[in-house]
Image (cartoon, rainbow, N blue to C red; front, side, top):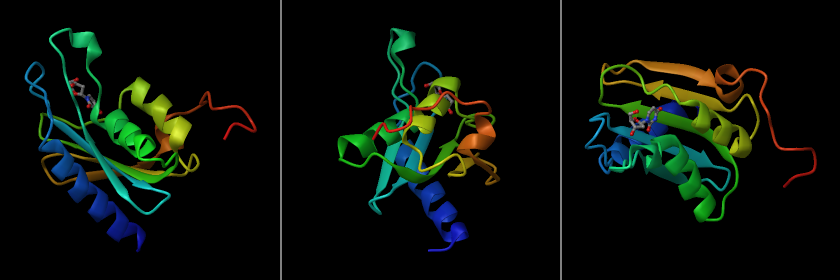
Length: 137
Ligand code: THU
């Protein structure tokens, strides 16, 4: 699969993930999808709570969905929102991306309702990262 095909597939999968968003408080639905190193696509969405701080973002839920299914590395990630603006990943999600990405060049695609897709990388959105120690599997 070419880089462009992977980007288009993950953006489509992220929009599918968004359909399950539970975001009645922010009304900012987010969907995400990662390509696992096992070749499977894993989706996520944001899930909010009346105790606002318990909210978990779409990106982290997609990555954790992958880990739950036995895969600990993703090779690309896409995130989309139908809310106003872009779903630029929050700091917590960037840190979790750093834990499970293949490397800092792993592509990150950020899409919005206008159809525009910003293409960056994990390293591109997380300069001077705190990463897992040498030898940690
Ligand atoms: N949110 C995400 O799921 N991902 C992002 O990239 C940004 C923010 C969620 C958290 C919350 O449910 C809502 O969007 C508004 O912050």
